[in-house]
Image (tube, rainbow, N blue to C red):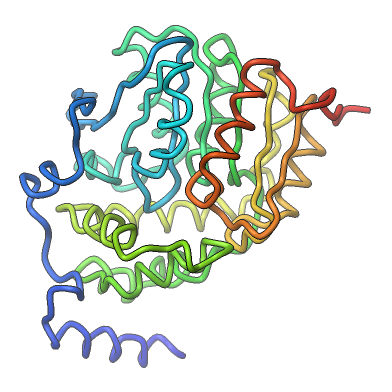
Length: 321
């Protein structure tokens, strides 16, 4: 389907004007009522009001979600792990209730890493375990390279970090014209199809899950920010030197991957495994891009084993030998 036909399709959907088409924005008051709880906090970082949650007690574990997601993606992990850790998770810039940074036109990795560092400093966190999925994984390992003294152990869950083809929906939304149209509307059925494509078992995608992803996409400014994120990631994904710094990661690392991940495929896992000095690896049969959502109990338990021991079950695989 060419851009002209896609434009006609988007125009037709826009003209139908039904609420599920995602035309207009959801009010911050409404979203806050539905998607915050007693652990929710907001902190202003250089004019950006970051939404985060601070739960549990013990060593600090920081969780970073992926593109077009929110801190809620970690709900299952928090339920399992908060008896053992102080868990801090946040909505990244351009996502969730944090929303866009109006001073930014690009959400490049340098900006994301700097924002994370300022956020942790504001919370007086000197050192923490760090876990990230997808874009959050990319931010995590780059942060571990730039601030090795602040990262104890590192968990990369289907993380970005090497040149690859962009997922279809991200590539589509980053195109001229289509990207601008998607800033005007974001149909719920498209969000649902996108989530199902990211899962290994689409039957696990509930209407409530789709509603949450869709609602938070409709926070004022998020659709424009997401297009900017997609375009930045598309540009970065073409950089042949994208993963060169992975070899500089000093923190013990666990690679967690869904074997049915079509967004960040297993060949990216293989490159991380090749380049990390020492890493442990666990993969999940039948699981897609979001193991912490699809398989929350098992993936959280695996993360806990690694964080407690620095390895996964047996001695970690040495990538340097």
